[in-house]
Length: 416
Image 1 (cartoon, rainbow, N blue to C red):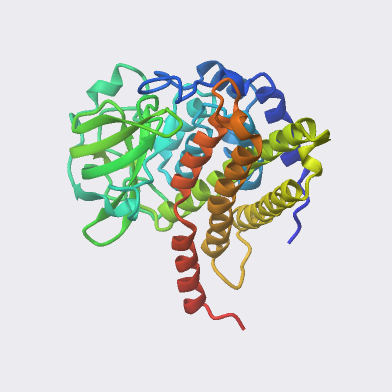
Image 2: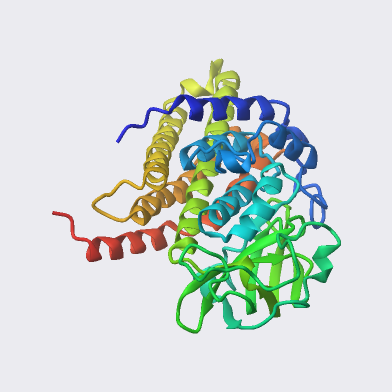
Protein backbone atom coordinates (compact mmCIF):
# COMPACT_ATOMS: atom_id res chain seq x y z
CA UNK A 1 0.00 0.00 0.00
CA UNK A 2 1.46 3.34 -1.13
CA UNK A 3 -0.46 6.55 -0.51
CA UNK A 4 1.91 8.64 -2.63
CA UNK A 5 -0.16 10.28 -5.34
CA UNK A 6 0.91 9.83 -8.94
CA UNK A 7 1.86 12.75 -11.15
CA UNK A 8 -1.46 12.46 -13.00
CA UNK A 9 -3.44 12.46 -9.75
CA UNK A 10 -1.59 15.53 -8.48
CA UNK A 11 -2.21 17.26 -11.81
CA UNK A 12 -5.95 16.60 -11.49
CA UNK A 13 -5.97 18.10 -7.99
CA UNK A 14 -4.00 21.12 -9.21
CA UNK A 15 -6.41 21.66 -12.10
CA UNK A 16 -9.32 21.45 -9.65
CA UNK A 17 -7.77 24.06 -7.37
CA UNK A 18 -7.41 26.35 -10.37
CA UNK A 19 -11.06 25.95 -11.38
CA UNK A 20 -12.44 26.27 -7.86
CA UNK A 21 -10.24 29.27 -7.01
CA UNK A 22 -12.87 31.51 -8.56
CA UNK A 23 -15.69 30.22 -6.35
CA UNK A 24 -16.46 32.36 -3.30
CA UNK A 25 -18.28 30.48 -0.51
CA UNK A 26 -19.91 33.79 0.45
CA UNK A 27 -21.69 33.74 -2.91
CA UNK A 28 -23.15 30.26 -2.44
CA UNK A 29 -26.92 30.59 -1.93
CA UNK A 30 -27.76 30.26 1.75
CA UNK A 31 -30.67 28.10 2.95
CA UNK A 32 -31.04 30.52 5.88
CA UNK A 33 -31.85 33.39 3.53
CA UNK A 34 -34.15 31.66 1.05
CA UNK A 35 -37.57 30.12 1.39
CA UNK A 36 -37.73 26.86 -0.51
CA UNK A 37 -35.01 25.98 -2.99
CA UNK A 38 -32.01 28.31 -3.07
CA UNK A 39 -31.76 28.08 -6.88
CA UNK A 40 -33.48 26.55 -9.87
CA UNK A 41 -30.35 24.80 -11.13
CA UNK A 42 -26.76 24.05 -10.28
CA UNK A 43 -23.83 26.34 -11.14
CA UNK A 44 -23.78 25.94 -14.92
CA UNK A 45 -20.88 28.34 -15.42
CA UNK A 46 -18.73 26.31 -13.03
CA UNK A 47 -19.87 23.13 -14.77
CA UNK A 48 -18.62 24.49 -18.08
CA UNK A 49 -15.25 25.38 -16.56
CA UNK A 50 -14.94 21.86 -15.14
CA UNK A 51 -15.70 20.45 -18.59
CA UNK A 52 -13.12 22.74 -20.22
CA UNK A 53 -10.52 21.52 -17.70
CA UNK A 54 -11.39 17.87 -18.52
CA UNK A 55 -12.47 17.27 -14.92
CA UNK A 56 -15.85 15.79 -15.86
CA UNK A 57 -14.18 12.98 -17.79
CA UNK A 58 -11.51 11.97 -15.28
CA UNK A 59 -12.66 8.35 -15.07
CA UNK A 60 -13.32 7.87 -18.77
CA UNK A 61 -10.75 6.10 -20.92
CA UNK A 62 -8.94 7.94 -23.69
CA UNK A 63 -11.12 6.42 -26.41
CA UNK A 64 -14.08 8.25 -24.84
CA UNK A 65 -12.19 11.51 -24.53
CA UNK A 66 -11.26 11.01 -20.88
CA UNK A 67 -8.12 10.98 -18.78
CA UNK A 68 -8.24 7.33 -17.77
CA UNK A 69 -7.73 8.14 -14.09
CA UNK A 70 -9.12 6.37 -11.03
CA UNK A 71 -11.15 6.80 -7.87
CA UNK A 72 -8.21 8.37 -6.04
CA UNK A 73 -8.01 11.18 -8.61
CA UNK A 74 -11.76 11.74 -8.42
CA UNK A 75 -11.62 11.96 -4.62
CA UNK A 76 -8.80 14.52 -4.83
CA UNK A 77 -10.98 16.70 -7.07
CA UNK A 78 -14.07 16.22 -4.89
CA UNK A 79 -12.04 17.21 -1.83
CA UNK A 80 -11.23 20.55 -3.49
CA UNK A 81 -14.83 21.07 -4.59
CA UNK A 82 -16.16 20.74 -1.04
CA UNK A 83 -13.79 23.40 0.27
CA UNK A 84 -15.69 26.03 -1.74
CA UNK A 85 -19.15 24.37 -1.58
CA UNK A 86 -19.20 23.83 -5.34
CA UNK A 87 -22.81 23.48 -6.50
CA UNK A 88 -22.29 20.88 -9.22
CA UNK A 89 -23.24 17.18 -9.57
CA UNK A 90 -19.60 16.18 -9.99
CA UNK A 91 -19.73 13.06 -7.80
CA UNK A 92 -22.97 11.59 -9.13
CA UNK A 93 -22.13 12.40 -12.76
CA UNK A 94 -18.63 10.90 -12.55
CA UNK A 95 -19.76 7.77 -10.72
CA UNK A 96 -22.59 7.13 -13.19
CA UNK A 97 -20.21 7.57 -16.13
CA UNK A 98 -17.80 5.08 -14.60
CA UNK A 99 -20.59 2.52 -14.22
CA UNK A 100 -21.80 2.95 -17.80
CA UNK A 101 -18.25 2.69 -19.12
CA UNK A 102 -17.39 -0.43 -17.12
CA UNK A 103 -20.67 -2.31 -17.44
CA UNK A 104 -22.88 -0.66 -20.07
CA UNK A 105 -23.61 -1.92 -23.56
CA UNK A 106 -21.84 -0.67 -26.65
CA UNK A 107 -24.78 1.48 -27.77
CA UNK A 108 -25.10 3.34 -24.48
CA UNK A 109 -21.35 3.84 -24.22
CA UNK A 110 -20.90 5.19 -27.73
CA UNK A 111 -23.92 7.50 -27.56
CA UNK A 112 -23.46 8.80 -24.03
CA UNK A 113 -19.91 8.77 -22.69
CA UNK A 114 -18.22 11.34 -24.91
CA UNK A 115 -21.05 13.87 -24.65
CA UNK A 116 -21.37 13.40 -20.91
CA UNK A 117 -17.60 13.78 -20.52
CA UNK A 118 -17.92 17.18 -22.20
CA UNK A 119 -20.75 18.14 -19.84
CA UNK A 120 -23.37 18.26 -22.60
CA UNK A 121 -25.39 15.51 -20.88
CA UNK A 122 -25.78 15.43 -17.09
CA UNK A 123 -26.16 12.20 -15.10
CA UNK A 124 -27.15 11.55 -11.51
CA UNK A 125 -27.82 8.48 -9.37
CA UNK A 126 -30.81 7.45 -7.26
CA UNK A 127 -29.06 5.85 -4.29
CA UNK A 128 -31.28 6.57 -1.27
CA UNK A 129 -34.07 4.05 -1.67
CA UNK A 130 -37.67 4.71 -0.70
CA UNK A 131 -36.98 6.29 2.70
CA UNK A 132 -33.24 6.94 2.80
CA UNK A 133 -32.68 4.07 5.25
CA UNK A 134 -33.12 0.85 3.28
CA UNK A 135 -31.13 -0.58 0.35
CA UNK A 136 -31.78 1.52 -2.74
CA UNK A 137 -32.05 -1.47 -5.07
CA UNK A 138 -35.03 -2.81 -3.11
CA UNK A 139 -37.08 0.36 -3.63
CA UNK A 140 -37.69 -0.33 -7.34
CA UNK A 141 -38.79 -3.56 -9.01
CA UNK A 142 -37.82 -4.43 -12.57
CA UNK A 143 -39.26 -7.03 -14.91
CA UNK A 144 -38.18 -7.70 -18.50
CA UNK A 145 -40.49 -7.78 -21.47
CA UNK A 146 -39.16 -9.23 -24.69
CA UNK A 147 -39.98 -7.97 -28.14
CA UNK A 148 -39.59 -4.75 -30.11
CA UNK A 149 -38.99 -1.72 -27.92
CA UNK A 150 -40.10 0.79 -30.51
CA UNK A 151 -42.56 3.31 -29.10
CA UNK A 152 -41.83 2.64 -25.47
CA UNK A 153 -42.27 6.22 -24.41
CA UNK A 154 -38.81 7.65 -25.19
CA UNK A 155 -40.23 10.18 -27.65
CA UNK A 156 -40.13 12.93 -25.02
CA UNK A 157 -36.34 12.71 -24.90
CA UNK A 158 -35.72 12.15 -28.59
CA UNK A 159 -36.44 15.81 -29.38
CA UNK A 160 -33.85 17.09 -26.91
CA UNK A 161 -31.05 15.02 -28.36
CA UNK A 162 -30.16 13.78 -24.89
CA UNK A 163 -31.21 10.15 -25.25
CA UNK A 164 -28.40 7.59 -25.37
CA UNK A 165 -30.33 5.51 -27.90
CA UNK A 166 -29.20 5.95 -31.48
CA UNK A 167 -32.12 4.31 -33.26
CA UNK A 168 -35.69 3.23 -32.71
CA UNK A 169 -35.15 -0.42 -33.48
CA UNK A 170 -34.54 -3.27 -31.10
CA UNK A 171 -31.60 -3.13 -28.74
CA UNK A 172 -28.28 -4.74 -29.55
CA UNK A 173 -27.72 -6.37 -26.15
CA UNK A 174 -25.53 -9.38 -26.56
CA UNK A 175 -26.66 -11.16 -23.44
CA UNK A 176 -23.15 -11.17 -21.99
CA UNK A 177 -22.47 -10.29 -18.37
CA UNK A 178 -20.92 -6.92 -19.24
CA UNK A 179 -23.64 -5.60 -21.49
CA UNK A 180 -26.68 -3.48 -20.98
CA UNK A 181 -29.88 -5.15 -22.01
CA UNK A 182 -28.95 -8.77 -21.50
CA UNK A 183 -32.37 -9.72 -22.93
CA UNK A 184 -31.51 -8.39 -26.40
CA UNK A 185 -34.52 -6.49 -27.76
CA UNK A 186 -37.42 -5.54 -25.57
CA UNK A 187 -37.81 -3.38 -22.52
CA UNK A 188 -37.61 -3.44 -18.75
CA UNK A 189 -40.59 -2.19 -16.80
CA UNK A 190 -39.75 -0.32 -13.58
CA UNK A 191 -42.03 0.41 -10.63
CA UNK A 192 -41.13 2.05 -7.33
CA UNK A 193 -39.91 5.18 -5.55
CA UNK A 194 -36.47 6.62 -4.93
CA UNK A 195 -36.24 9.52 -2.49
CA UNK A 196 -33.84 12.47 -2.30
CA UNK A 197 -32.31 12.06 -5.75
CA UNK A 198 -29.63 14.78 -6.00
CA UNK A 199 -29.86 17.19 -8.95
CA UNK A 200 -32.87 15.25 -10.24
CA UNK A 201 -34.38 18.32 -11.90
CA UNK A 202 -31.12 19.13 -13.71
CA UNK A 203 -29.97 15.71 -14.89
CA UNK A 204 -30.82 14.33 -18.31
CA UNK A 205 -30.65 10.77 -16.99
CA UNK A 206 -30.96 9.14 -13.57
CA UNK A 207 -29.13 5.87 -13.05
CA UNK A 208 -31.62 3.87 -10.98
CA UNK A 209 -30.84 0.60 -9.16
CA UNK A 210 -33.66 -1.94 -9.15
CA UNK A 211 -34.33 -5.54 -8.15
CA UNK A 212 -35.54 -8.26 -10.47
CA UNK A 213 -37.80 -11.19 -9.71
CA UNK A 214 -34.69 -13.39 -9.67
CA UNK A 215 -33.34 -11.27 -6.78
CA UNK A 216 -30.64 -9.64 -8.93
CA UNK A 217 -29.70 -5.96 -8.98
CA UNK A 218 -29.73 -4.01 -12.23
CA UNK A 219 -29.12 -0.38 -13.18
CA UNK A 220 -31.40 1.50 -15.55
CA UNK A 221 -30.68 4.77 -17.35
CA UNK A 222 -33.98 6.58 -16.84
CA UNK A 223 -34.57 9.84 -18.75
CA UNK A 224 -35.86 12.68 -16.59
CA UNK A 225 -38.69 13.32 -19.04
CA UNK A 226 -40.18 9.97 -19.84
CA UNK A 227 -43.55 8.25 -19.74
CA UNK A 228 -44.10 6.77 -16.29
CA UNK A 229 -41.50 9.01 -14.62
CA UNK A 230 -42.77 11.54 -12.05
CA UNK A 231 -40.67 13.95 -9.97
CA UNK A 232 -41.77 15.62 -6.73
CA UNK A 233 -39.65 18.42 -5.26
CA UNK A 234 -37.78 17.89 -2.01
CA UNK A 235 -35.41 20.38 -0.34
CA UNK A 236 -32.06 19.45 1.19
CA UNK A 237 -30.59 21.01 4.33
CA UNK A 238 -28.33 22.89 1.90
CA UNK A 239 -31.39 24.40 0.27
CA UNK A 240 -30.76 22.53 -2.99
CA UNK A 241 -33.56 20.84 -4.91
CA UNK A 242 -33.76 17.09 -4.57
CA UNK A 243 -36.32 14.93 -6.29
CA UNK A 244 -38.56 12.10 -5.21
CA UNK A 245 -38.51 9.88 -8.27
CA UNK A 246 -41.64 7.83 -8.86
CA UNK A 247 -41.59 5.14 -11.50
CA UNK A 248 -45.00 3.94 -12.60
CA UNK A 249 -44.62 1.18 -15.20
CA UNK A 250 -41.76 3.13 -16.78
CA UNK A 251 -40.59 1.21 -19.85
CA UNK A 252 -36.84 1.44 -20.42
CA UNK A 253 -35.20 -0.08 -23.56
CA UNK A 254 -33.11 -3.12 -22.69
CA UNK A 255 -30.03 -1.52 -24.26
CA UNK A 256 -30.20 1.16 -21.52
CA UNK A 257 -30.29 -1.36 -18.67
CA UNK A 258 -27.11 -2.72 -17.06
CA UNK A 259 -27.54 -6.29 -15.92
CA UNK A 260 -23.92 -7.17 -15.10
CA UNK A 261 -23.24 -8.66 -11.68
CA UNK A 262 -21.45 -6.28 -9.34
CA UNK A 263 -22.31 -3.09 -11.23
CA UNK A 264 -24.52 -1.63 -8.51
CA UNK A 265 -22.15 -2.64 -5.71
CA UNK A 266 -19.26 -0.94 -7.51
CA UNK A 267 -21.29 2.20 -8.11
CA UNK A 268 -22.51 2.30 -4.51
CA UNK A 269 -18.99 2.02 -3.06
CA UNK A 270 -17.69 4.75 -5.38
CA UNK A 271 -20.52 7.09 -4.35
CA UNK A 272 -19.87 6.42 -0.67
CA UNK A 273 -16.13 6.98 -0.98
CA UNK A 274 -16.69 10.17 -2.96
CA UNK A 275 -19.02 11.45 -0.25
CA UNK A 276 -16.27 10.79 2.31
CA UNK A 277 -13.95 12.90 0.14
CA UNK A 278 -16.48 15.74 0.19
CA UNK A 279 -16.70 15.49 3.98
CA UNK A 280 -12.91 15.63 4.26
CA UNK A 281 -12.60 18.72 2.07
CA UNK A 282 -15.36 20.52 3.92
CA UNK A 283 -13.87 19.60 7.30
CA UNK A 284 -10.43 20.84 6.28
CA UNK A 285 -11.78 24.22 5.23
CA UNK A 286 -13.89 24.60 8.39
CA UNK A 287 -10.99 23.74 10.68
CA UNK A 288 -8.81 26.26 8.82
CA UNK A 289 -11.52 28.91 9.27
CA UNK A 290 -11.66 28.05 12.97
CA UNK A 291 -7.90 28.32 13.36
CA UNK A 292 -7.83 31.69 11.62
CA UNK A 293 -10.66 33.06 13.75
CA UNK A 294 -9.35 31.83 17.12
CA UNK A 295 -5.89 33.18 16.30
CA UNK A 296 -7.30 36.69 15.83
CA UNK A 297 -10.13 36.77 18.37
CA UNK A 298 -8.80 38.03 21.71
CA UNK A 299 -10.07 37.78 25.26
CA UNK A 300 -8.24 39.19 28.27
CA UNK A 301 -5.56 40.46 25.93
CA UNK A 302 -4.70 37.06 24.39
CA UNK A 303 -5.86 35.16 21.29
CA UNK A 304 -8.38 32.55 22.36
CA UNK A 305 -6.37 29.95 20.42
CA UNK A 306 -3.80 30.14 23.23
CA UNK A 307 -6.37 28.99 25.81
CA UNK A 308 -6.02 25.36 26.78
CA UNK A 309 -9.71 24.50 26.38
CA UNK A 310 -9.74 25.90 22.84
CA UNK A 311 -6.47 24.19 21.91
CA UNK A 312 -7.68 20.81 23.15
CA UNK A 313 -10.91 21.01 21.15
CA UNK A 314 -9.17 21.99 17.92
CA UNK A 315 -6.55 19.28 18.45
CA UNK A 316 -9.31 16.69 18.77
CA UNK A 317 -10.84 17.90 15.52
CA UNK A 318 -7.45 17.72 13.82
CA UNK A 319 -7.24 14.07 14.87
CA UNK A 320 -10.69 13.54 13.34
CA UNK A 321 -9.46 15.02 10.05
CA UNK A 322 -6.37 12.85 9.90
CA UNK A 323 -8.44 9.74 10.60
CA UNK A 324 -10.95 10.80 7.93
CA UNK A 325 -8.11 11.30 5.49
CA UNK A 326 -6.26 8.01 5.98
CA UNK A 327 -9.43 5.91 5.93
CA UNK A 328 -10.62 7.72 2.78
CA UNK A 329 -7.42 6.99 0.86
CA UNK A 330 -7.44 3.40 2.04
CA UNK A 331 -10.95 2.94 0.64
CA UNK A 332 -10.21 4.83 -2.59
CA UNK A 333 -7.01 2.84 -3.11
CA UNK A 334 -8.85 -0.47 -2.66
CA UNK A 335 -11.48 0.58 -5.21
CA UNK A 336 -8.94 1.90 -7.70
CA UNK A 337 -6.42 -0.94 -7.46
CA UNK A 338 -8.69 -3.90 -6.85
CA UNK A 339 -6.03 -5.12 -4.43
CA UNK A 340 -7.05 -8.03 -2.21
CA UNK A 341 -7.31 -7.62 1.53
CA UNK A 342 -8.32 -9.39 4.71
CA UNK A 343 -11.80 -7.93 4.18
CA UNK A 344 -13.64 -7.00 0.97
CA UNK A 345 -13.25 -3.39 -0.15
CA UNK A 346 -16.67 -2.67 1.36
CA UNK A 347 -15.01 -3.06 4.77
CA UNK A 348 -12.60 -0.22 4.04
CA UNK A 349 -15.49 1.87 2.75
CA UNK A 350 -17.43 1.20 5.96
CA UNK A 351 -14.50 2.39 8.09
CA UNK A 352 -14.17 5.55 5.97
CA UNK A 353 -17.90 6.23 6.36
CA UNK A 354 -17.72 5.77 10.13
CA UNK A 355 -15.04 8.44 10.46
CA UNK A 356 -16.51 10.79 7.85
CA UNK A 357 -20.05 10.73 9.27
CA UNK A 358 -19.04 11.38 12.87
CA UNK A 359 -16.00 13.48 12.02
CA UNK A 360 -17.66 16.09 9.82
CA UNK A 361 -20.40 16.57 12.44
CA UNK A 362 -17.92 17.05 15.28
CA UNK A 363 -15.80 19.46 13.24
CA UNK A 364 -18.62 21.84 12.37
CA UNK A 365 -20.10 21.68 15.87
CA UNK A 366 -16.75 22.62 17.41
CA UNK A 367 -16.34 25.37 14.83
CA UNK A 368 -19.75 26.81 15.69
CA UNK A 369 -18.93 26.72 19.38
CA UNK A 370 -15.52 28.40 19.04
CA UNK A 371 -16.82 31.04 16.65
CA UNK A 372 -19.44 32.14 19.17
CA UNK A 373 -22.05 34.42 17.62
CA UNK A 374 -20.17 34.56 14.31
CA UNK A 375 -20.99 30.90 13.77
CA UNK A 376 -24.67 31.73 13.33
CA UNK A 377 -24.18 35.07 11.55
CA UNK A 378 -25.65 34.79 8.05
CA UNK A 379 -23.10 37.37 6.84
CA UNK A 380 -20.36 34.89 7.71
CA UNK A 381 -19.93 31.71 5.58
CA UNK A 382 -19.70 29.17 8.43
CA UNK A 383 -23.45 28.60 8.59
CA UNK A 384 -23.34 27.47 4.96
CA UNK A 385 -20.67 24.90 5.76
CA UNK A 386 -22.76 23.69 8.69
CA UNK A 387 -25.77 23.13 6.43
CA UNK A 388 -23.66 21.25 3.86
CA UNK A 389 -22.02 19.16 6.59
CA UNK A 390 -25.43 18.09 7.86
CA UNK A 391 -26.41 17.05 4.34
CA UNK A 392 -23.23 14.97 4.01
CA UNK A 393 -23.78 13.39 7.42
CA UNK A 394 -27.31 12.39 6.46
CA UNK A 395 -26.12 11.10 3.08
CA UNK A 396 -23.49 8.91 4.72
CA UNK A 397 -25.87 7.58 7.36
CA UNK A 398 -25.20 6.98 11.05
CA UNK A 399 -21.80 5.63 12.07
CA UNK A 400 -23.49 2.95 14.19
CA UNK A 401 -25.03 1.39 11.07
CA UNK A 402 -21.63 1.20 9.37
CA UNK A 403 -20.10 -0.28 12.51
CA UNK A 404 -22.77 -3.00 12.40
CA UNK A 405 -22.03 -3.66 8.73
CA UNK A 406 -18.32 -3.85 9.53
CA UNK A 407 -19.07 -6.31 12.32
CA UNK A 408 -20.99 -8.52 9.87
CA UNK A 409 -18.02 -8.49 7.51
CA UNK A 410 -15.64 -9.40 10.31
CA UNK A 411 -17.89 -12.29 11.31
CA UNK A 412 -17.98 -13.53 7.73
CA UNK A 413 -14.23 -13.04 7.19
CA UNK A 414 -12.44 -13.81 10.47
CA UNK A 415 -9.03 -12.17 10.72
CA UNK A 416 -6.20 -14.53 11.45
